[in-house]
Length: 460
Image 1 (cartoon, rainbow, N blue to C red):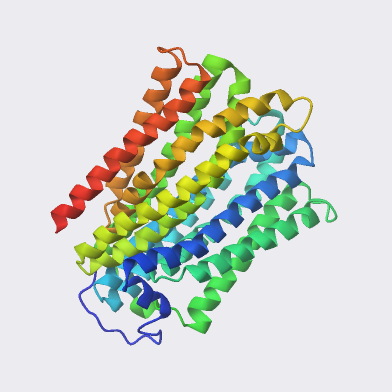
Image 2: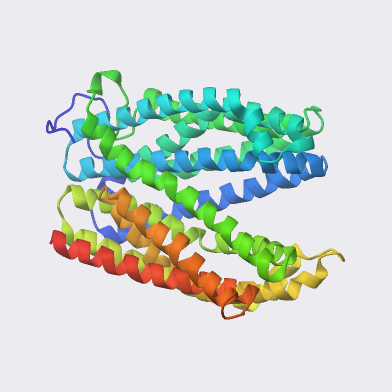
């Protein structure tokens, strides 16, 4: 964080977003969350649509995309991580009324993004085939490489959009983040069928649709920052002063946030193994189908948590412990209201939701068990908000490692251990895994909430 607090940049000194995040924290959490919820839901929808169009090319094409997906998810994790690091670091500068620090931190974010993108692009393009073979691509290797080479050529676009979204969120501008994500989703949805089928590009068409949509959004973002210049943050080389402390401030949240993504993916693999062991592959199909619904259901809670990072960062930068405490408590209340509503709806409509994944004669027998899984997960929803919001508080104040520790505790330790204990020693089978997810998340959230409250109390 730089000490100079004046800047000759042409950007406005106070924007609507800045007024919002530096004002009432309750209002800020609510108003920032709305656009983020819309954006996240749309992104999830376009990923689903993408899979549907590719499935029309046959099983090998769908499998090829599946083998590339783990590598793609790593990039998404890095993109989200850099964005979270930017949001946290810049919002702390905003809270401290350090305008020069705001701009310098934003420039550091872009430079870090460029460097990481170059390194990853070279590595992925060189070692893509051997990596995919290691992951088991086998007979689909040609399709997987064809798809992956195009997707990973756009690495810089994916990481840049994540960083830019983080910068916009840091200044309370989630509306433009929403607009950009809507553009990306709509363009991708339109281009997918056109490039895959009429254009005859096949699986490569799906990859090009993704890259083109990201390129268009990147163009919009660059226009906002460099041409329109109505953002609070000013991206300019004249505002860049190399500073390792700034790099540490960004990566101190960004790297742990990226690792959290990998931890959650690892837990899915562990639970899949447990389910196969106690109930066979049908149990994995039930969990995989039901978990998609669960992830959609908790998106609004995650959106609120994303908003909390910016609001908490401003409060911390301003050394306003009272607002930090209000942000934590109020966001949990909002999350709980959403969770309770979602739980009721899921419980009531579980049998009907299950039919979506079991509409064919071959899978119809899975519907009752999918419905049962969803009804158990209703108890999971209720205990998500304290954990998510507490982790977001730590990210906002720059304690990314704390947030990572909480994720490891909740996922790798509590969820995995409870699931194993209930499923095997107690003999509950696949339902033991389900209740293990609930129990582990409950225990992890309790630890997260307690740690966050103690931390805030010590700051006061």
